[in-house]
Structures are given as C-alpha cells and as structure tokens.
Length: 350
Image (cartoon, rainbow, N blue to C red; front, side):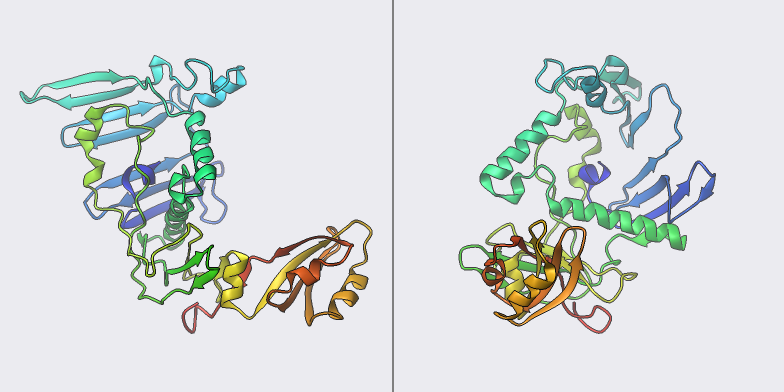
C-alpha cells in the first residue's frame, strides 16, 4: 500500500524482529519496522507486528504541512464474508463509522479544524475480479489490477529491507541491482529480441495504473498531500518497442549465487539457447526407463532428472523436438522447463 501511494523509495532502513521471543531476527522474523526515504524528502514508516492488541488497529497516519489524517481499522470484507454476506450485497465493504478516517487541517486563520471522512464507496473484491476479467479479455498487461512489474518492485523493497536488517545500515532500494535485462517477444513473428546490457543504474519502475486509490477517500486528501508531486516512476523506452506484454525484467542481487534464473516462454527460450529442457509426465504405470529407450532412438536426449512420485523426468535435447517427445502413448504431457541459466553474473552480464 505504501508503494501504491508513494512509489519506490530511494533507500530503506529496516529492522526484522521475532516479536514473540523479544529479539532481532533477520532470518525468521514475525514483525518488521521499516523507514522508506524518498528523494523528495518524504519519509514513510511501515510497521507490521504480530503482537498488537488494540480496540481499533491503526492503519494510516499521514502528516503534512497543512494537516494530518488518521485511519483506523482493517479490511471489513473478510468478517462480512464470514457472516454470510456476498460481494454483490448492498453495503458490502462499507466500513462502520468507528473505522472512519479523521482529517485535521489548519485553516487560513490558524485555527485547527477536524472532520470525519467516511469511505462510502469502497473498492471491494468485485473491482479486483472485474479487473482480472478485463485483463483476460484484452490480453493487455495494463488491465491487470496488480501487474507483475509492481509485484516485482515490492519484492525489491522487501529485499532491501532484509539487507538493511542484516547489515544494520540504510540500504539503497535500487543499487542492490546489478543489471536490468528485458526480453521482447513478438507472438506474431515468433522472434525474441535479446537485451542490451546497460550500466548498473536502473531507472525507477513504471507508474501504477491510473485509477482511484483504495485510501483516496476525499479530494481534500489529494490536495493536502499531493502524492502526484513525488517524482517516483519513470521508465526507459524499450528499443524495439514492446509488441506484446510477454516482457520480462530480471535481476541479479549481490548476495545471489552466480546464476540468474529467467522464467520465459518456450519460444523465447528457443531463440536464446540451442537446446531446450522439457519436463515430461508419463501416464500411471508407464516405465520411465522404457520411455527413455524410445526417445533416445529418435533424438539425442540427456536425462537430467527423474521424478518417481510423479512418474516423470526432465530431459535436455535439441530445440523443437517437443512433438517427437510427445508422440508416444505413455506420455501424459510435455512441458518446457522454464528455468534457464544464461551467463555468469560474477564474471560478466547474465
């Protein structure tokens, strides 16, 4: 939610705790305290605690030059569903007055004035489902309620918080990345454009899609805090232009081993490497050894792994042999192994 409101910070300072045991624990925490610092001077404090006994759980507390805003309470949809309500019921997602936000502003004459702001038109699960339906119908990434790129950026922030907790120092949110690689795949021409390697100064992420924020309960808040003035989200143009949303950006963190793992479409894989790996599942009762004997007779195949429980195996063979591997009656399915290693991050671009 902090990312949705303010974008990606410039740096983070984090503490991870085992609150039940009463100690710092960066490896197996149950609570966190993080400070997100932005280039504009904005500072956002994020806390998540497993132990928090309150009559009304604090949710948001914004403080600006012209006032402040407090919002208590958690999402009411879950308890409403447990009580038998459905997302199409009138009043679903509407919070009780006790959970209303409180806005306090300083008037022109210096007087302090407070008012209660009710969330009368909540963004419920229905909006989420409608967004997914629209994305499935259009096939466009921008129609997905939470695009994968935004989830990726939140993971960047979490990685930086963990690194800060381990080192005890503020950690830049962006320089933890060595390289940013993009693959563009055109579904019509079946051509993949490999990335050009760029210096390790990645640009901030794409902006979240336009639309009402879940917490934008009043136009007064937008005027008061003006999050749009935060210069947070820019993206370098892709060359050639992206022709389909099957675009992947992958990262190598300093603490990772010397390989970068890419989850890519089969056609992208065949355009980048001369061999492909396939995961093959056989029908119940079929013999893996007998199947291997059959496929080695028709193509050069290396068996890299077998799965006794699932009666399957992983093979590496020449590209474009999927049909040959599947042309046997004992085969249940053949899938491309979507984990591909390209290069060495310690010795060069990966």
